[in-house]
Length: 288
Image (tube, rainbow, N blue to C red; front, top):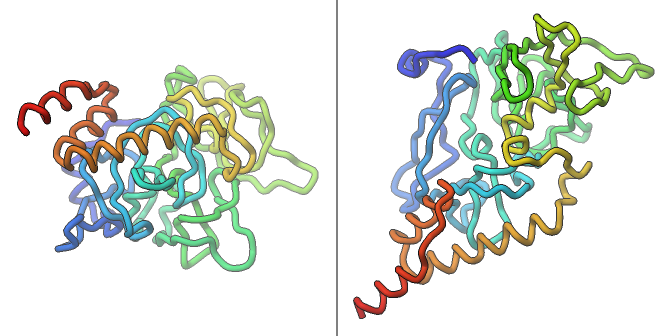
């Protein structure tokens, strides 16, 4: 994507403050500047946070290659996430840091979008970008019926996925499909499905579903996960067991050696480093 000066973006009125996290002490809200444009990224440390959706335990930012279901938007993810080390609870990084509202998002610039934590009403609603059902966290327009997942809010009208295609991809105009139409064939998944589509202005033959583009955002593609179960509630058993074992293991470390060292270990894990537990045990024995 085109480069943007982060200092200029921070001055933009479209930026709001995130109130989804509070400090562990509960003294005051953790006010992080959260972008409403995909041009800006946030880097969080490995410290513990308390999230409104899971107040009973702190969440720690980790990086594991296993697939998970985000308990916020109910969509899949892999890699970076905010996770509870005590129970099976994960949030996409962008779901955990979602701002309360978005002004002039590039995919719906005409109206303000408001963050909602629950699916709306009795009718099943769909994301206007990827075409999948919205079952949890979502941004909705109070003026019209527009709605999109938080991870779809990380997409833009122009995307650069050089690992998939050598040229920039532009979001094509939305089309209304009849009951007999199944959508545009995607050059990656080879399927036809509803939802927005990206196209290459240089290669007329290349198309990418927005839902497939979303897999470049949520960590699935980066962690080698090509196919996912049709229902997010049915996760790969091996992936769930492996992920839980790692989280339980490090949860025990946090309780056994203290938050300072434990936080450093989790931070190293997020960076792909392996902790040397023998050294930690030796240090503990020497200090007794």
